[in-house]
Length: 157
Image (cartoon, rainbow, N blue to C red; front, top):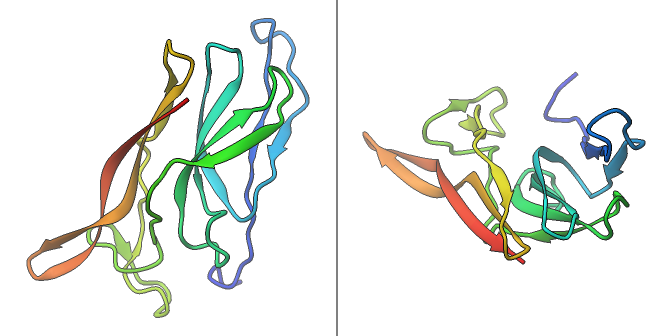
């Protein structure tokens, strides 16, 4: 099977425990369009689960990704609203500068590494802060230019 012809829609699955892990809620999916991946969760001061995640719901072709925040609508509900934290989308399918692979000519110099340094943390004021890496910046080295990873930060109420 050609992985570039595959249609995917990966979702984040969550479950929670309120008795120190003795019992867990039934798993629930954040059912958003396209792929979501690499989640990081924290509970805010109101007891709401907040999840930072890489998110492709903003691109109908399911290539470009951003970083989003899912916020539980009520404590223990595992129902969420999402908001976009990133201010630019990244394209991992082409023109990466550092970690590249060209498996299919339609995707020249696709990234082979998205990064693994993302997280969120609850802050005393009730919101969360988020940190992630993405590919929006350009880098040139030895005459070759392309997308390069950099770190980004956002605060959300």
